[in-house]
Amino acid sequence: MIRAWTGAWAVMIAGCTGGAPDLNPGSPTAPTKATPVAADVPTKVASGAPSPAGASAGAGEDWLVWWFHDDTWRTRWLRVEGEAASVVGQREALIVGDAARLWQIERADTEVAVKSCQCAHDDLKRCPDDGKVTMLGLRARELGGDATVTIHEARAEPLQGDDMEFGLQVVGGAQARLIVESSEGGYFCGAHGSYDVADTVFDVAAGRKLELPADWWKQLPEPIRRAAVQSIEKEYNGCQGADLSTDQLMNEYVRFAGAALALVRGAPTITWKLAAEVMYVCSSDYALTGTSTSGLVAEAAPLGLAGPLPAGLSAALTSIGDAESLGFSRLTLPDPERAARLAAFTAASERPWPALSTRARGAGGSAGQAKVDEGRKKTREKSYAEAIAAFDAALELDADLASAYAGRGYAHLLAGDRERARADFKTALRKSDEAKLQAAVWFNMGTLAVQENDTKAARTAFEKSQALRPSKQAEAALAGLAAPGN
Image (cartoon, rainbow, N blue to C red; front, top):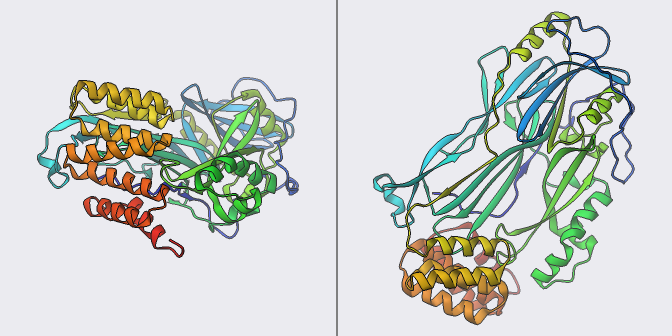
């Protein structure tokens, strides 16, 4: 069974007390003032043909630069000398390094069966397949060897639902640390959709995810944190019925939700994400996420993104221009090892990077199911009038379609029309005795009661939802009602 969504963006990042490796030990310390620091972008870069594999290293440093653009990963081996960099080799592949080791990052996907929502969950193996979906995975294979490391394991068990989407992408990194964003969302046999995104930082060299104290991000320059919080402040206060200041929200209510590194007009650019917990009715992943951007800053050292970068490397990035994802690795290779690693790099396989997302739609359902799917999509987009119209169309095709009543009620609830929402929820409960749908509808009834300050009715509804299908959402809602003052 697909896991119950908590709505939290879980981020596990480097927790070593020494922080990230020094990517440029000969350079001065990066600025620490409390303003976003843009990367130093010199104006010249060396040109010329790539050096042959095994060529003498000569003076300078070896770096790998890896970037994603136009649906393709590319990795460039550079020799950086002062303000210039020469291209040693390039592959259409994602290759990262750490000191004297190199790994090629590959997708490791699996295909699983999708089962109808009409099937009993405890008997899925006997239920016929309603379709197939590709589950996304990621692994690292050390160049010059056969060892592999699992970075993100693809799900192997069957799924149950009628409209699901999954995503996976490396969104930046440094050395052999990869920032990986995975997402799962859709309608898993409930009355409304669910969505979850997780950012993790995986150290390929160590073979594990990394962690930091939960509040490490509070060392980031205040303007970075403040800009992210201000982007969600109005919506948060409106949703929660609160009147929090930016400082209160920033210091007491938000958490770190992830980071990504891109290349914008040749400059490394970090997108920072901070999230605040909210009710489900305000966001399907229980969080509002604000973003802000900066260049490389000293306080990003735990992610390996402190900078400054060598002038020649910055010039090489300028020549690349733009990329959706960016990473870089400094290598330390004596001549005998360098020749072997360069040969392995040159021999690395090149093949198209698979799609970043995959989707499954159930093949079964009534004539109105396509309109239900359309209504759910419009609900997710917050186009409530269009969503309600789509659910109306579904019910014209099939007046007994419980999922259409449930979906329309949810759209009415989000649009602020509680009476129509209540009527649709009650009809959905009458039209179907399917436990998953009933659990979701009772949860929505509880949310409606919370909005009406009817604690007793809310508790009853959440308890019914939890009894029909235990979930972290209902558990959290009941815990909130049990808090002092409720």
